[in-house]
Image (tube, rainbow, N blue to C red; front, side):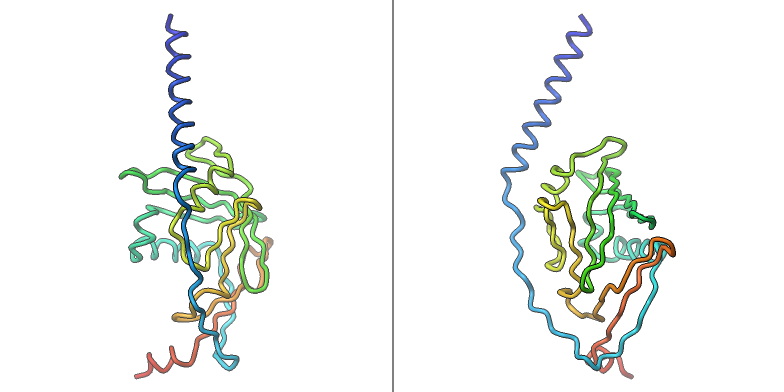
Length: 196
């Protein structure tokens, strides 16, 4: 008797999940228009910086604490560098923090960073990448972040990011040194605004 009840309950749970996915896929996707990008002048001062996972994690912690848009979505975030990047997040959903993990392969292309999603899981349960991209394609992301479910890539198009307070270009990633090499260009108008 208890086995039949368990099977019935499991079937009802499965039907609820399928209904939720159908409803989710019927929602409109995020419509973003490209923001105009002011080019950084060729004579802008440029600094080359090696960034490790500790610096990325410190930046993520700062963004979660001080950026209302980021803090609304994430409770915590942590990235571990290697041949692939292991990205652990606590995503806020209905006043609860859901632990999620993405394993991505970083690819540097023309000053931008392409993250190919190799796997995803919620807590310890693997999530199909198609479901992850269905969620990401509806998320409110900056215009310079593009999500492509067909190729399972997240493109961080730093060359299209507003150069405020500085422009970012990705030079390379070294899995052996576990460092991301960036060029930071500071537009002269930013320096003039901050002059004493």
